[in-house]
Image (cartoon, rainbow, N blue to C red; front, side, top):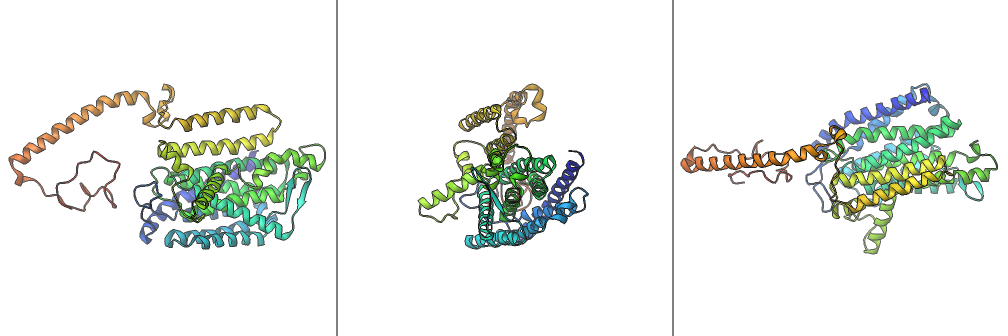
Length: 459
């Protein structure tokens, strides 16, 4: 693997670093322009949080493409293919629509039209599906209209699937990062493992997409300091769809020299991975399932398919008792199981142990779903690597310390009450609205501090 891996790692790291460094200034900009909508009924967070995180992610995308264009092993992608330019054009358009929506809340039909136009822009510049591998038949060439319609449909489905799942802190960015990592392993195997040049653009797209998500995640993990908004969710959805379109519609199964026999046998052998990449229902199976269930639920209730509600999968995980962080981790687990399981099965489709491992991990996932209040305990040798709430010794020592602290707090409260009764005129006035008793945050007192003593001054 050698040198190409280093080039991809450099591109990924530059993309992640630029995204991470831009997110802080973008957060301040979002607050300044008022891109902090009020909390809605379907929201999980308790305080208004700025959006427009997609601005930083788009900056990371541009930086990744620029760096890749100047690397020896990756500049051939720009010389032999127009797909990177097509991706940048479509991404710029969908990003602009998302920025306007984050600030002004544009209509859902307008966003849908913008998604179709962005997909059409990529098709015009050559990023389209040319043929499909169909079992029992082989490779079927598509007409221009068929390829265009299928490409637009795939882009719209993927964008909305990612947008629908963006409901918890760090959920969309983490799931898309997992999907991009699985797709990168597959496309890299096609390009450098079997010398298929048509897989080069998709490999670059997935590496950049991982960098975008990894750079934004530190700012977006619970409790999130900024949301990616539609400018970010639609952007990463389009990049993920572009990678799937590139590797599915332009890599000929007959070009793979892995399998002896006819093209039909090669198509059969590659079916476990070509179908997921054609319609990424396994690479992003959780967002796609959430999208289908949301459309069915809203249509059944007589609502618009684009009407927002609290019936998504992550909302249901919270309702049955899972914490915010655990709900996100469960969604990560299922996404990784499906994505990497599919890629592993495509490499060794005749191995029974892969199926058994997937079934066993699925059983573990079901157990986690049915035990929302179960708190895992790390072994003693791993306690230094996990958060404090998972450490046994800290939890045993925390109870006496908490009791002692409560006793001291009670004694100090009684002392203050005695002093106030002795001389009520000597109390220092409390200034309302400044940092202190009533100035915990710029928005208001944080609700996660239930034991905080309220000030005696009137509001």
